[in-house]
Image (tube, rainbow, N blue to C red; front, side):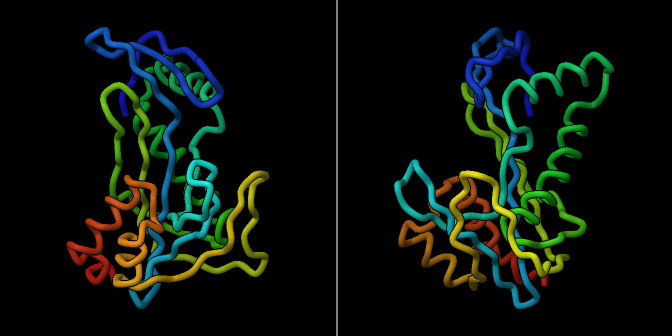
Length: 194
């Protein structure tokens, strides 16, 4: 996570600022993704409709840490004024968010999400995604509690081979999440978790 000078909002989701070299950077609030693995080593994926693809896509549960850019800028500015460790504060918010998103998108109460990766996107556009491993969860009776506008056609559990096949068939299109999943699967990290 990078902090920029002269941070300002330019749209509901994007802000603009300057980095330490004086270059203009676009940024958006960070997001979270949950890699939920069951006792058999299967991975949970949502089937979510995405406007950018005009189709359903298999995705890791997740969402935005801050609802809009102004809330994010205010959070960072207040933390700087108090000389707090912004990265630590944002990580705490990310943990809260992954817990909330797992409840909303799959109807799970998760415990002890473990940060496994932070993906930073590019030099001129800054958008961090915090990836958490979840193996401690309880399926709640009330099921998912989708936000307005979310179109999620449930979730399913997939083996390593099935996830790789979904990826080969271009059914998992969020590239950064694909990259995290591929590393876990090809490095055989899933079996080390069980």
